[in-house]
Length: 134
Image (cartoon, rainbow, N blue to C red):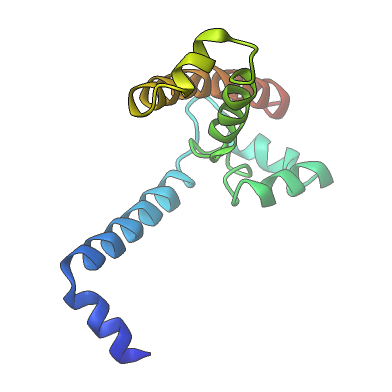
């Protein structure tokens, strides 16, 4: 196993992918400790001792107890992807047309998915802020 790891670092493409993955993990861990501005962290800790918040904290990777900037995780993006895929099923004719166009249509659908992610994230973040801050 050690020789496999050594050989993996000899190939430049694999080495770059490993370093990129490690950097993404480092950025996520740092972002999970940065609290959203304007939130009383001590009051949030007292709210976080309840049962429901501790379960939600488990699903957010620990970012909910200090209400970090990454507390939402990837759930808004996944939700947006599901919504866009459902809208492609003959509900929005433009999305059906884009899904049949190939790469160009996929890029347009991805762009709309990102826009919907920002909208969903904003509503989720507003709900968390109103619901969790005392």
